[in-house]
Image (cartoon, rainbow, N blue to C red):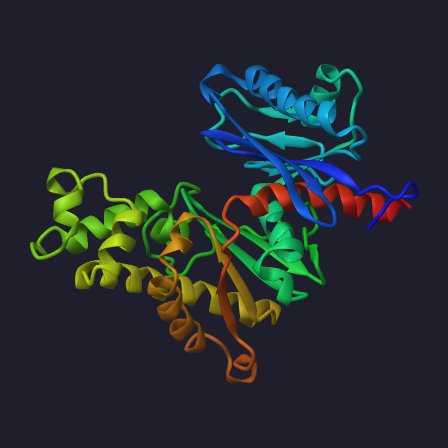
Length: 328
């Protein structure tokens, strides 16, 4: 969409992570225009991180002229007004931070700012620029260090009553199962979060001396990564394929519970582990079909988000575009 002057509408999208801050200048029509990345250096505290974000924003506004605003996808709890981040994991020293106010202090010309949970931002980005464009309503699942989720209904984020809806990673599939970081027994994150999955892979492959993982992981199979599992699976490693199939089965079970509750039957899976593609998604599809009511079994679909980290920045920027639409 063009503004009244006929120029492309632009916004800045930020994906705030514990290791890196990814930023992009985003066109409503064309998506990513320019991208930049900076180290988070989270151990230096929130003041340093906010200074880095403001520096990235200034670099885009100086180059692009009129920018409608800034959208930020962040870990942690977000208030209903989309202004405040509370206790984000992997960001030491953050308690409750009003990100909009803090950026306004640092920018020569304050910009309208919205902040949203990072999984929600990724879901919105997928809905308008990624694999979710084929669906008006779907569930976004991000498989990375943890397991994130977003409910997209009619191309918008469903936020629940306080803004915290979509915490799929903390849904339990076994009340006597392993305890996730959240304290929830049998939460899906306790199976598919990177640290937990790597531990499970170690248990399953430790005595599988024929597995290629023994050639690439550290002694005693420490340091296994999802990428190692995928590469070994592609090379025909039966043990690695079994680990990914185990993970896919668990994923399909929790997705089945979501279908039974919400009657949303489309799923987009992103994040690092999603790079395993059908090695994890095909067993998830089989498990999903066995986990839903017969009346809800038609139209089930799980697709991979191939946009990588870009969808987080795109979705963060699109929050600004949606806000502008609402207030026109």
